[in-house]
Image (cartoon, rainbow over all chains, first blue to last red; front, side):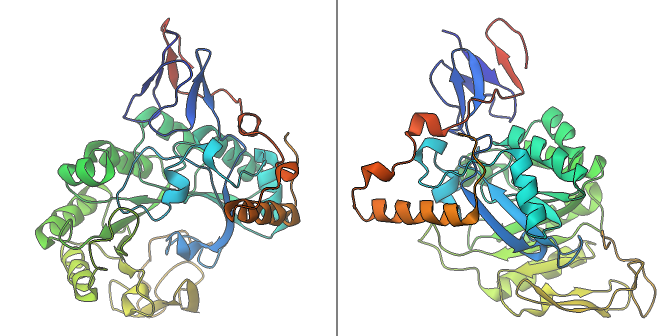
Length: 326
Length: 54
C-alpha cells in the first residue's frame, strides 16, 4: 500500500500511493510525501502591509507577497478559490522561484518583508519555512497570513522564523467551521495561543457574514476569549463579507453590523478594534485607547497620517501603543 | 527547470495562458508538461507506513 500519514495539520490525511492529501498539493510519490508546490508559486504581488491586514506592524512596509496553489480548508466564501481550491498541476501560472530567488526578488524590489499569503501558507510549509529563514538572513521580516489550521509542533517550528501573523478566526463556533470551512475551531484557537506564546506579533481577522456568524452574543464571546487568551492589546479586524465563490446568496455585511460588532469587542476589553474592507471608515484608523487621540489615519491601504512618537507612544498622553513600530 | 525568471517572462507566460484560455492552440509555446512543472521536494511532518517519521 505504501501509505503515508501527513502530520502537518489536524486533518491527519492518510494518503495512498499516487494520491494527494486534502490540500491537493502534498502528494504520496512512491511512499514519500512530496511538497509539489515547493518553489512553484502561482501568485506574486507587492502589497502594503496594511493589506494583510497588519495595522500595528511596521506601517507602510512594502511586502513581497507569495502564494502557491492548495489549501487545507474549503471555505464556501473563499476569496482566492481559483488558487486555493486547486492543485499545482491545475494552475496556468506556475513560476519557478526557489527560496533564494524569492528572497533576491524581494530585495531587488525594495520590499522590507515577505508575506506568505492568499491561499494558506500552511500547505506550502516547507517553501515558506526555507524562504523565511533566508529572508531573515537578508534582513527581511516574515509575515504569515493564515487560517491557523495547523498542528502545534510544525507551527512552533515555523514561528522561529516569523515576525508577524494575521490569523483568521472565522467564527467562534465549531459548527460554523464544520459547515462553512470544512475544519474545526479548536486547532485554530490553539494556533492563536501558540503564536502569541512564541512571540510572533499577532493580529486577528474575523469576517462577518450576514446571518451566519454576525450574532452579537457570538462576537462578544469571541472578543472575551481573545482578551483573556491573547491579551487586550491584540488588534482585531472585523472585515466586511462580499458575496463570493459558493456563497453568492448572501448580501455584503451591512456597515451597522460591523460597527455594532466593533462596539461589542471594545466593551469586552479589546483596545484596538478595526473595520476592514469598508473604504474611508473612521474605524480603519488607530486611536489611543487611553485618551482617544488619532494616532494613525488610513485611507484604504495607505497611511495618511502617523502621529506616534518615535518610541511608539501616544503624543498626547504618552500611553504606550502595542505593536512593532520600527 | 529551476530557472530564475524575470517579470518580463512572467508576463509572457500570463499572455500565453490567456491565449490558451481563449482557445488559441499554441502547442509549441507550452513550456513544460504538467508532470515536470511540479517540485519533487520531500515534505516534512509525515509518517511512513513503517512508523518512521520525517
